[in-house]
Length: 118
Image (tube, rainbow, N blue to C red; front, side):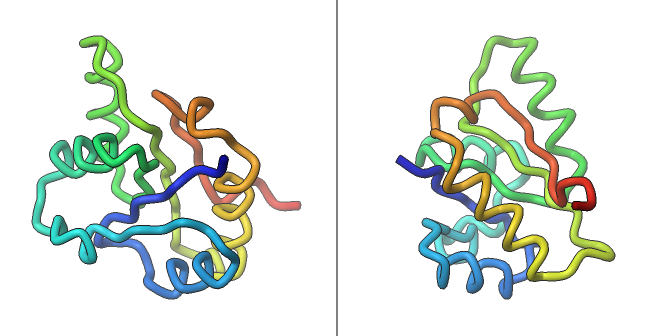
């Protein structure tokens, strides 16, 4: 089973379209009528849907750290730094996570993309 992704409103929609063209299950906060939720509620929403949240927002590191200390779980987080990274490179790295990882492996985990230069 592959990892389903949930994109916050700050992620480039070209990345969403590219992933969908490659068969990755993607839902955006905008499509879910959740684009106005604050960060913590957005993480709760993604987790309730069993989807890994993809964001470039640094605030989520603090939120997930607090949740970890409180014993709260989340479906996973991918911090996607988009500045200076091509859309194709971002699609490539996110596709690898979505297709290689299992949802259970992502629980309470944070992955960072882009991966180091190849």
